[in-house]
Amino acid sequence: MLACKPIETPIQINHRLGIFPDQIPTDIGRYQRLVGKLIYLTHTRPDITYAVGIVSQFMHAPSKEHIDTVYRILRYLKGAPSKGLLYSKNGVSNIEGYTNADWAGDQTTRKSTSGYLTFVEGNLITWRSEKQKVVARSSAEAEFRGMA
Image (cartoon, rainbow, N blue to C red):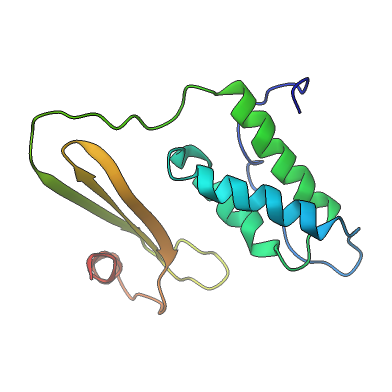
């Protein structure tokens, strides 16, 4: 991948990755090793977290379409080597947390997605997003479940 052409985004917009009966299988061992390394890299590269989360869903049955998406992430990394997190000592001793949720963001199930960020001394330490387990009836309920 050293001679590959860099790309602007880690995953296609409006991607349609899934498991389909007519997919072409790929080397499962290579796929799992690459995705495992990308999962480790997400600790300092939150810009690829969404894309890696998508490709990690297909670890048990990867196809050519899935490995091509992994290669796309690698091409993105080549074009954006300086977009990582820098942990520095700021002298400010505080902990800040932020949360947010979208209301009925999944068009299929109408479930909301909630997420949070935690900063310690101004450094991003933890972040997570996940679909909520139930369908919220209002945006206030989705926000409350996200905070909980």
